[in-house]
Image (cartoon, rainbow, N blue to C red):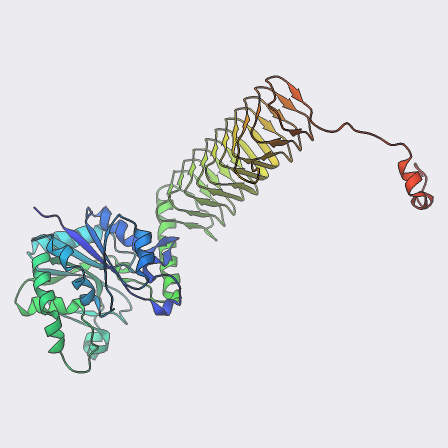
Length: 473
């Protein structure tokens, strides 16, 4: 038995967006619109997906990788013509059903897709138009039904009568078709357009395929989704901003309904793939994106940026940037800390103000309290790194690692020239430049001996001494 499949239309230019990027790669909550669509399709249980690419096709293909099949639409001659380019893909699926949808309408969801398919199958439809009722239908194709509720036709706004313009049920641009019925209709689309009324654009639209199926007295109806946002797309920056606003509020509501506290949402943006545990507090100015997972009882913010990171229970990040890293339980990070990719910070660690950590492992209960850089380092547990310390990890050709063992104490302004190892419970004196391994339990002093030259100032700067008050007066 052939499996149901999906064709996503992603060839559009989006000229009004005035962007060097393809339209479908415009982002809603930091996620390209086409990724929203693909995720919705996959969550509905459909794995076999074909994307029709056109404008800047190489960029779209590069973004999609090998996860989906792609076909190319050389000329942008309408949605029906776009589906024609996927004819071979549809043919392979025999008598199964195919979902057709737009790559720039990000709010189509798995619930709607599955509900429409169940409706399509129960009604033994050859075509099912996914529709929704919206408050302002201007610009959308109207769903015209008979007095008994049957689908009669889809009318574009420019072709609609005044009465038809009052209809608020609109075409979402998503459809379920029986594959064979769609292929038969596609074979007649070109002729159908030639016979259409003069003056219409020379485009082959998918709505014409629905009209052909209706003209053959085959079953074709509309499935009215209860989620009006599924019809929304973006052709310019204003519409894109509206999509972002809708998605942002939806995600904030979702998190709060799952037990996350967001007492003031000013400046808070949470991506659609972010997971946050109950009783975590999100303060103003936080941006959380990517595949980030945050545990319970955390405090995030204010003014914190987190991307693709794992934050464990009880951690706090204050005025912090954190990228592709792991923060352990009850760790305290910030303010003004930067955690760069590849970092693993252990439990109950303190990363203080103006500290940068990159591609490093920091053991439990370690403290790096202020003004330090730990890059390409393996830091043990219960280590104390003083102010102004740095792992000097780059020799001009390659990055090298520093190892600081458990219990070590790194004095202020210590520079550790990698590759170097500080032994267990070892100390470095403040101001040292460490170029050799330090044994366990040793104190390393690597600095020039202090020399005090008496009366140097009075000999070199007699004028200054004459004009200074005597000491103690």
